[in-house]
Image (cartoon, rainbow, N blue to C red; front, side, top):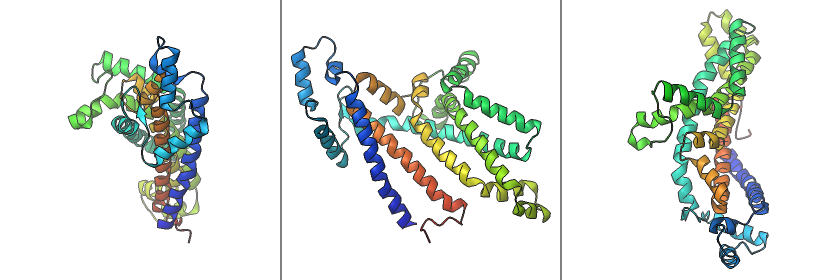
Length: 316
């Protein structure tokens, strides 16, 4: 296990290296002068040139990348020009809302998707199966921002049950925290719930008609126990994979939902940084989000051995 974990951690290095090069090149070949954006339209050419020199934008691009990576390896992601604070501090301040939103959305998706997928597989070909698959297809088709607007209109404007927008940290109380995140979590998690439902159904169908399931039923084991203990456990690996991927997508794909519901998370941070051409923040956030995504998938790989003892992570 430790050997496998060590190898996977080493594999993070080339991934992050390639991502760092890609995001650095994309930002620096994008038309527009960052110094002009920072100083505004009234800035003189001399002021723009001085700021470019101060920020190192006049150096060759490979020198700029080398200097940036040297600081990154020291744990320094640079400083935000507009927020006047280190990028690391900005990420630490904005990540908790995104993490809470992603966790709640994932919980909602799992609670809905796993039972629906099991029922759809068990009732294969029935009206229930057709209905659940149609609903899941609809859930995949509706954009998150559109569903968010409908939820906002119905639950916040019409019924006045939940806040329209905004965010309250967990320190102000669990219920207060949840009230502001329920609607955006539903809007964000609906697509993931639809994907997990379809994957659960497909995985369950792969095992429901195998011999060991028939043997378990012939022994008189209760049907619910056959479905949950024997079928679901053996169908868990593809479901676990899609859950891990969807959680990474929730973290990286919360940009629109956070903007819609005015949640001060990572998505809103990177959107504002793109508008301002705050290069240090964009580079730091993309690198951080990539690290989170890769770590989530690493955790999923480690959980494979828990759900399926036949998988030996130590390679023996």
